[in-house]
Length: 367
Ligand code: APR
Image 1: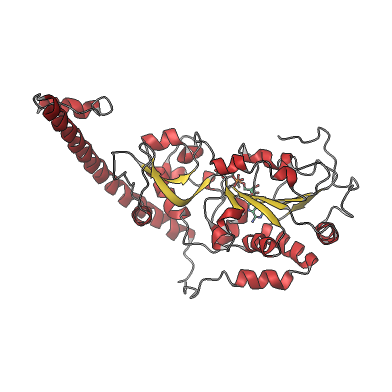
Image 2 (image 1 turned 45 degrees about the horizontal axis):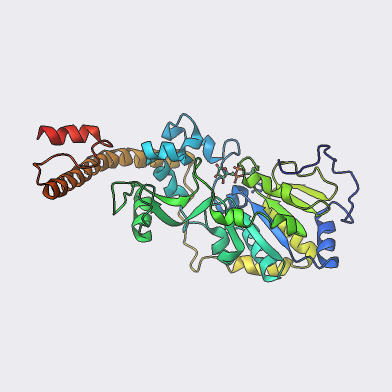
């Protein structure tokens, strides 16, 4: 991946730039070198302590918990070809992932603190939860490499779709359809099989200009994002704060690998920088105004029963949707047929969508 050196140095190899391969060594480097071009690269692991599962952690990751959606491959839930055939699993999951229910973690606040202190050059995120924005990071500082729930469009005619309608559909676990054509609507999340946003490619040169790289909460398994840390210049310290060693981090003399949870790691780095209080205050400011009084925590069985009830309701509603959808397409075909017949003075027939929905075209001929 990237331009990693072939030989992996172990953590005992003496650094060439840092005084020590520790967070304290990184803090000294930041202060003594007046670091001000930090790139941060994150994945789902920085949001797990907010209550959003990551994707690949065994047992707790999303991909280990989609059995109820009986997908042959869990990643299908984010695959565009699969979505075209069956959007329901995504919308069943979207209700649990959609922003608005979660608070930023202290790791998000640490990134905002880097910005406030004038050190952040760019933040690259794979996350779709918008928690960086909620933590106060300005949009132009964030590269949302895998898109986000912030906007939504039709996957066919690309027409924008109203945010309030999308929120309502997600809240009900319903599948929204385009207002301009019979196409499906999807949040602007990058699915497998879709191109990353231009913003990612326009900023890919920044890691090569950085004077410090911090990678947090990602398995670095999905390209091209996973290639970013390899683009950081030789001799520039790279810090990994993650539950597990990933992506060749640790292979360079000035790599610092901190195995553990992100929140603990950023607190330790902030304290070493003398920013401990600033970080706690900044994170405190992300607390929702009135912290809702939660009822007694629900047992796993209760949560599972809720899920079963919800999905049963969901299947009933979806059956209803497919009938409604068929009616909409039939009306669309008839409208097209009438317009066409009027234009050509012909008798009634099937419109241009007949090849897409042959069974409806036949039904229209039989009428
Ligand atoms: N602290 C530190 N590390 C954590 C924490 C935590 N609290 N929680 C999880 N992790 C680590 C896991 O050990 C794992 O290495 O974060 C990583 C999460 O990896 P993934 O679940 O693969 O998530 P991510 O890297 O964001 O996935 C990349 O895959 O499915 C696609 O588009 C999706 O953007 C996603 C991409």
